Amino acid sequence: MADLQKFCDELRAKVSIVDVVGAKVKLIRKGREYQACCPFHNEKTPSFTVNESKGFYHCFGCGAHGDIIKFEMDANNLSFMEAIEKLAEKAGLQVPRDSYVKPEEVEKRNSLYDIMELACKFFEKSLRMPEGVRALDYLSHRGFGDDIIQKFRLGYAPNNNGLKTYLASKGVNDKEMNELGLLTIPEDKTRRPHDFFRDRVMIPIMDKRGKVIAFGGRIMGDGQPKYLNSPETPVFNKRRILYNLNNAKDAGYQEKKLIICEGYMDVIGMDKYGIHYAVAPLGTALTEEQIQEAWRVVDVPTCCFDGDLAGQRAAIRSIDRVLPILKAGNSLQYVFLKGAKDPDEFLKTLGREAFDKAISETIPLKDLLWNKNIEGRETSTPEQKALVEKNIKEEVAKITDETVRNYYIQEMQDKIYNELGKGASWRKRQKAMQEQSEVKPQSYVAPQYPKKYMPRQNFAEKKSAYAHQASLATSKVDLDELVAKYVISALVLYPNLIEEYEEKLMNFNVVHPQLKAILDCVLDVVQDEIPENFEAMLEYLKTKGLAQAVDTFLEFKMLKIQNPNDMRMRENLDLRILETQLRQLDAEIKDCLKIMQTAQTLPDDVYKRYENLKKEKENLLNSQDFD
Image: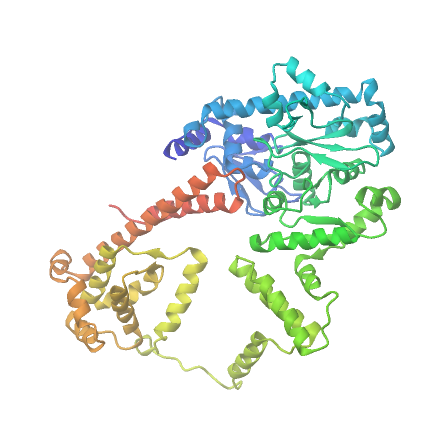
């Protein structure tokens, strides 16, 4: 981990951020900085700046901010390790492989990519040979000209063992071909191995970098299966790959659109009409991994399904996949094409303008979730309505993000009220009662108290408010038992510090039950009159039945010698709390690094969390006076 951190620092030092960003947008020098129109949102007046000396970019329009690694990830839809590798290649550096993959594994993987590239070129060449005439006619009949054929590298698999023979001449053995799904080796040893794809139009499947990792084969007649995809291999996991993402990601960024359709022929057909931001899953229902890949391009991709029953079933399956991974700002929306079988036929029949209109009339995920549970169901009796409500609540419970889940609960409650006549929700009734109770006569003037006599807020209320604020910022930090004893002893010794540290301690969690009981009692004293001194504080704790716990767990004599006054005590308290916060931040930074090193596709929130933690640590250190 430490090696990778050092390597990242070396990359930032050796690779110019101006060169990295300048490869994507046109930069204009303005004094010490460079300016451009932001690549992450549409704007006419430049608000995007690049600071060469500090090594970061910042957009004052959308708030995008980061370094060379973050820019490569966001602008080119790369994972953390993919961005590192790209920048390392640019700088002529070797990524420290021992932290996440062995060199021999990298060499073997590259060799497999080379074999797949050879196979792709063979299929492309075969399309132009005499045996490929029928396949070329098929593509032409579908309206795919040379430009489409070249862009998508379409080809033809001959009805013989031509690929096996060709790859063998390049030194590829049967085991390697079989491992990559290019060759079938029968269990019956009397039968010879043969090409996996035969007499099919071939569609190469590529990863985000444009490397060929698999193939799809389309039959030209009426046989079955109509489509045949590569099996899973060391370089191909169909759950993670969206077809055409290598081409669609840049167009999707620019247009702020991404269409997920049902198959790769839909994607190719849409590209022919100038719709370059379409992708498709590979013979499976849309998976969680594919949805997250789509979210790396746009926040709310559009799922475009056929208007038939199969299309509706596909949409319903996608709901089950997306609900558990929903997060703030990210969702799916849906379009069902009516009057045509698929996007390609819709475009041929009705044209681009009609398609654009249809694709703009989307159904939000929340509405489709409601329709899934209401359509075709009887809701005329209370029992039937109760069943619908029960089913919807069970679906919403699958959402793991608490904030998103709460908004869905509210949304579904409103729909139940408006469409099933259930009545006002608990939230609405409570809000109405609260508003009514808060109405005051116009002549009412709140009493003004001198600060000394200001009524104290109930500690339970303050604790709840502080805990809520802390939960929005970060998770609570567990206080080490020794640190907890030190902090509580300090507050008992100097009760005048309690109010000062009350809010700060809401960010910490004391695990030891008896220490927690003492701390709660100490903090709870603020709703009464705070004891004037140490002796009065001990007497207060005695009245709460905590005398024995105080004698057992707290220590005051040495603490008083080391901290003869509250000023010295305050300094040492701040230091202990700071050390605890830094330990927690370091642990979370290491966790983020571990995820970024091992994940094949890195969620954006992990990198953002990593950057925020580093910034939080830096701010924490800068805020301290170490002189």
